[in-house]
Image (cartoon, rainbow, N blue to C red; front, side, top):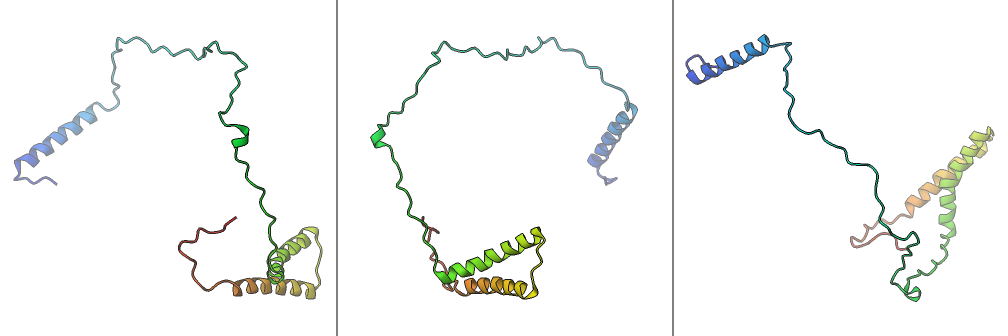
Length: 145
């Protein structure tokens, strides 16, 4: 809000009022622009010219075939110990069996459903109990293949 005793703020207020008055007076009028005397832009041709190169160009590497690296085949995946294998089967196998039964519309007896639930919870609990309590080595890069 401009102060009445400040001459600069009063001048600024008058300028703003004049600008608003001009905007209101010219509202709705369109500005007519004069055309510029420039040459119109010509789009480049979209056709590409091919150089006269032979079509049967053969690219050969400078590496001798005996110098090429061929990685050795990896060793077979080791099986986990039997107790952990059963725990993982309980964690992943039980939901798979339940999903197949639900999709196929097979109704399981109550004792079977309780046995499957116990296998799932037991497998999960066993895997959690076997987890290491020690913190990971900070320089550990993770799994080594």
